[in-house]
Amino acid sequence: MRIYISADMEGITGLVDADDVQPGGRDYERGRLMMAEDVNAAIRGAVAAGATGVTVNDAHGPMRNLLPEALHPAARLIRGKPKSMGMLEGLTPEHDAVICVGYHSRAGALGVLSHSFMGHEIEDMWLDGRPVGEIGLAHATAAAIGVPVVALTGDDCACAEMADWDASVSTVAVKHARDRFAAELRPAEEARAAIEEAVAAALSAQPSGAAAPPGPSTLAVRWQSASVASTLLGIPGVTATDTRTVQTQGPLPTLYRLFGVWMRVAASLTNQAPYC
Image (cartoon, rainbow, N blue to C red):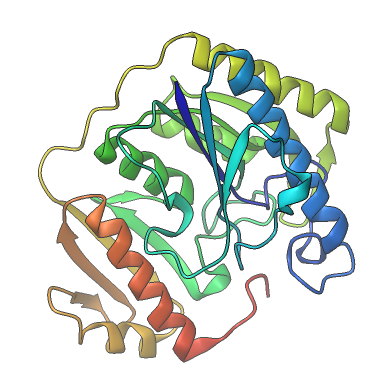
């Protein structure tokens, strides 16, 4: 059994603020160690369930947060950027299940460090007309690749968002949001034991392959800047629905990869801090 772990940072045990998750932040070094411990708990759960291979993709920000020497030896780490598939780099049909560790709720939700991919630069996103963030887009893309998401960890808002997409996914709330930069924290040892137990149980249930979405999907993104939307119209197949919203159609996971190009264009035009 081959397991894929996509590891974000905002939904990690104990972390609540930009200083916890951004390089240079006063608590970032502690934050990256906390991230490794949550990921290691998921790896232990996978190994206990019989995993013969575990791939971990560092999916947060610079994608160089996880220290290789801090990671469980059963896992192989994908680290650094650019990555054509971003938060899902390295996911293939040969994997049997996806585990999302440290995920957060989408832009507009009152979850801890909530946003959709680019801080306040992305105001909203829709997949086939349905509001979507990193959780929903990862779930849909993994399904298109043929690999089910079986477990997710994050705050209670992230867990609720995952349940809205797929109630069969096992979730572990490691903290409960009090506001966007405040939470009631679950004790670290308790949270990691819960992660390990939930992952082992989810994988022992023998997840089946995910059903791919039928036909092409439509992805729409509303940007904070009209300049980003205007520039993206230079890409074939991209159309505008208003001065700040663009959309395109295509199959997943190709659409996910194209969205990564959109973000690189936006970053070159804006360069804004994620959590202002």
